Image 1: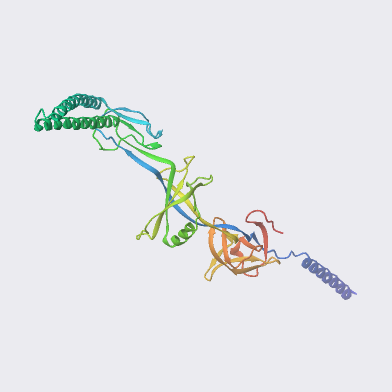
Image 2: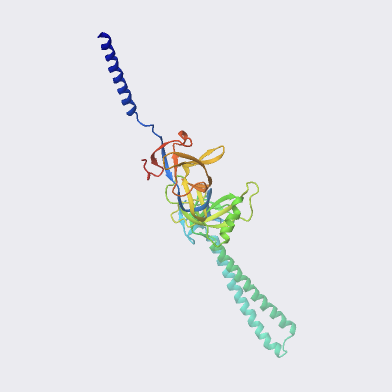
Length: 374
């Protein structure tokens, strides 16, 4: 009886153990896939563009100099002030030039009187010579005197005009609309004619943005420009989060720089809000054309191996396939795909380091936040 009792106890224990063992297997959770973020390949029109660093240049730069010597008696603007074409900038002491003008006008009046007298004498001798009352030689002398007097009057008139011009130079006006820079010569200084600049004026509305592109882009730029298209240029100052300023390509240099292998281009910008400033470096975007129906994938999906670029494509069963791709260019967060993907496919955009071909995944979100994992 004791032996059979022990046997019953062992059977019960074995049954309980087996029962718990079976129950434990049923409660094990299935293995989870690697968590990743996903994005969708789409098809859309994308610009064909060149991005480069450019430099702003004033549309016109004028170094204002004096055409006459004298003392600066007045300065009519403040440094950094906007001026319009024709605005008075400097006054050179005009008194010496006013006196010279008066002297020239007096000489003109004197010589006009003498010319009138010589003309009257000539007219009298014309009557006498017609009657042969005076020698021909005497008549010729009066004619010469009258003609010389007329020439002297014309010379005096030129002297008056010159004196007026020199007096006008005493009032220096702005030749362009622009912004004044640092005042280099202040009031009270005596200056020479056409010597040092008094101030520099930069025209910043409109403004140029100059940039250099590799010479291999030249043929493409010329082709699109020859097609009659007005190539658009965008410029944005660094750390500026606003919209880029819009301009038009207006200049292609006539030679490639042999030392750098680049060619200089310029875009013209209206610059109405004056966001662009001479000497400032800006991010430039030259738009050549628009590529319709381009296949676009999220740029973070592109991976690089020794064999080239590839992406992890998500299959319907939530496993991944490593697929080689050909990327023509990257614009911001978009990678333009020439070969390897089609619109509608989903690709892994984050978490690639823990993946191998055929690995199971769990989508935790999307690159744009529009797709949610299942």
